[in-house]
Image (cartoon, rainbow, N blue to C red; front, side, top):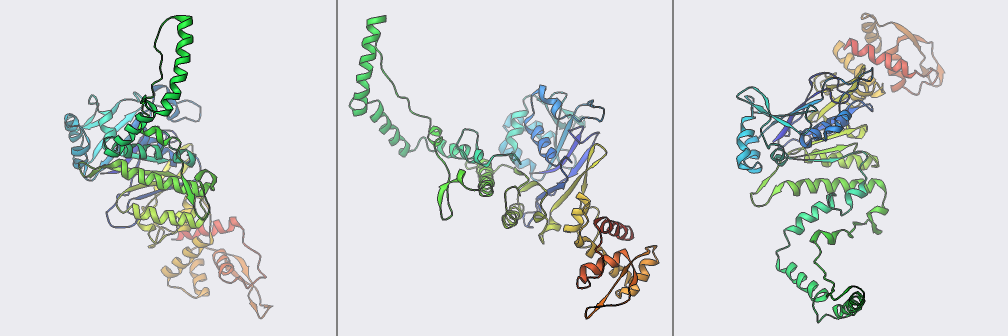
Length: 478
């Protein structure tokens, strides 16, 4: 079962109704087929998608609703925020194995004619989850549906501000703590653990124990003073067994990469890498039901995975995520070009986030391709950040040459001029260090020659604005 789409209305920067995103679904075989990458400038809504999914699954307190409602230019709030999710895939299997029997009918009825399970939550009542009702063809709120909905799938988040040390600690709510707690709970009834309990009681609670005899001396002194001052009473210490997960609180992760020291003393990049590995293991362990032999649907959400990772580390992480996403859905936000440089990029869901006025807009990069080989690093950077690059200039120039059939510079220049691109620059060739007479060229060819013939050093360098202008003119021609 996978997340097919999300629809947001008045959620944070997504002002107005029906901001729709259709996600990539794993096909079970293709690397990257379930990977969804969100790119765009800061404050363009990438992390808001993560928050919206978290809101729909878990809800929030009513007094926190103001935090997720859109804010207009005049500082007012519009209508209530709303998030809708549609699930697809083997929904029936997930309902059968992970929803309690008396709630399954409500979930089955929420599967619409397109075989999608639809759910909605809004800030009218932040704690109320609505499911699609096939009979009324509208949303309704079956009683007691929130807990079964949470049991249907798992969401696992690593936020950009997540402290890797926190996730690697062994507390009751951290990844490590939860992982070991699951293992420990299954171990309580084992003969090995029973032997440990007997040993504990023998040392701390048996009258024959040397430790217990020394403690008895203290008990007698306390009892004597108490009796003298307050009256007769029997006072003694009892040592209850520790809960099994209590033994993990003083545990720590050590990393030996030539020097065996605690993880907390390693660099931030290594700490974050360990935290990401823990997240993946936790997701798999938590989602798998050993008794039923079934794995619950789970989705990985990673906010800016490049943080603290050097380029090679980012490349290795991307390779791992491409493999995982053959069968699992993975969502990540990034500003790093190293998550866009892979031969599998055409398999990936690429979503470009930007501002249009004060509202966030999302564009599916696969819907408006510049080239047959799209998407490319230069293309994405220009669409997402308005960043002109020599890579995109090269691609556009080569594509136009190919489409026009004019591969000699002079012929291609005439073709450009026939399409209202003017000669605005002069190019100077050098021959054995001697300058030849300058000749008129278009801005496109001037920049192309700079890129391909840096040995001609008598020409002034083009500016970033000229690079942008040339790219924009070629995009219009394309």
